[in-house]
Length: 450
Image 1 (tube, rainbow, N blue to C red):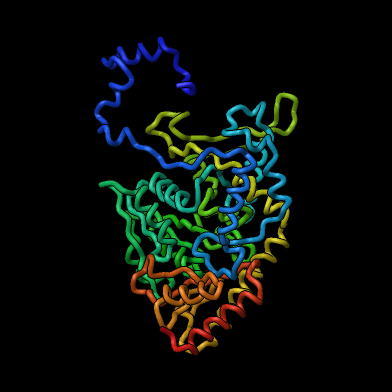
Image 2: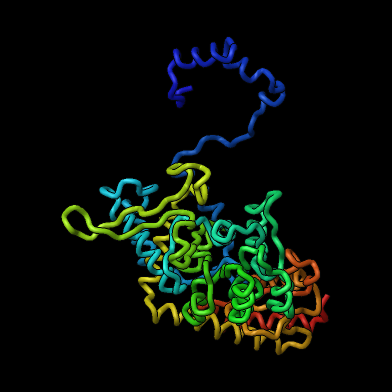
């Protein structure tokens, strides 16, 4: 009761209004045995004792940084400069929620503007927004956006789109008047003939990922032509780091580009929070969800920033709203901006080249062991699928015994691929890590494989 803000008079008014005499009566429908629940808690601790106890418990934890780790599948370990943490930890970045008032939020507005600018430079698109939750919801918002632009109610999504992204897209598009089709794959990549059959004059867009979930880098030029030739838009889900070495999506005809900013300056943090991005051609600006910060001049002629567009139902008529995004994600977007600024053009390219080269060196070493081979003979960027002689889950179990966190078990999403692991390498993956994995696989093989 001491923590409730209501006065006795206010509480009496509420009880009279709903027709009860006491607070106990409010909970009378709950069985007594549930209300009499007792927790067996230890005695209270002083602050010093509590800190010591938490340190003791925390010492039992083992993180991926303690071991060689080859997990990826949409969430990636990259080096985060110490300066980044120092910058985003400044109090003014923590205290702003949504910058409604430009006269007191110029710093936050500028940081969002710089984030948008960086996304445009990497993707080659005309305009980018802010406030996407993550890559999955950004892809779903892009699908809705494409339907608003084209007036069509059908979306075709790549079967090689991250399965969790595809699941979110399905959830967003759930309804009697919307149809979602999935493309077919040929050796882990897009089947162009199947796309041509699926796309028609009633299809709003084709959603494709590069690199795709299996790490494969598809040539999207022909796919773009097939999509555009049938009146649809091309939505590309791109990896930010890979854009330092791959063509920007605008060069092969992307209309909307989305993705997740986690790899660029945001730690794994046990799954979040992430930050998504969405960029598009300028002609589609009015259909973009989230927020857009624009540059202008104030009354004195000085450079200033303002929320130019925030077309959600809190601000405009519900039927005209483009989304109901309510979270700003500005701190995570700031981390992306600071990361890209600290690394610069050359630094980001160096990181991407390390990912590319180390992933291929990793593939070379593990496939030297008889019985282990690449699942798909396709170009790949940061990760690749490896076919093992036994179930991938069993390989991972044996690797963990040797202090190695193995790859992602593809059977989780693709039951037919129960012998496949998705192995990932970034700039944090050392030569020693790779050789340790290769030696462990060889040892497992020579031991006879269970």
